[in-house]
Image (cartoon, rainbow, N blue to C red; front, side):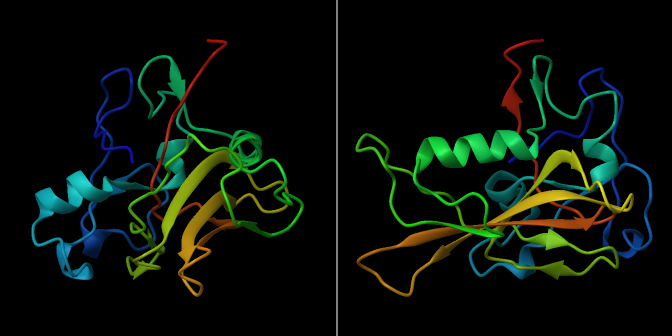
Length: 184
């Protein structure tokens, strides 16, 4: 997950602590407190394991939250990744279930934690991973597209990953992943 405190041009992104997150409508990032996790005891451990959470205003800023030559993925980029991992996945569904990786050379896992911060500063979905896309919601100017990933452990023999697509308020804080821009 992204851990930057500056845009690619060197400008700082505003840091907001927990008491300051509520009602924020300009670019910002925060660090989740370690007491939300059983195994992360310090801010440094949270920073290294989970990264920072950004609101969508930071994601959508023209100064580019990703390093030069990289960008925040669109919803279509995420869909392409899902189809690469599991070509038979039904990407028309709201919740996409990947019940097996479709190729043998992948040994994929992810640290299934990170959650999101709502617009009041509360931390939600602690053991799910949430990621912004750069895709704005076409029906509501106050929301943007995101993906949430969790591991379905009901059947230990056949673990599944579930990816949920939804719109979330732009004031929420989510993780960010960057993709290499092949056509800069």
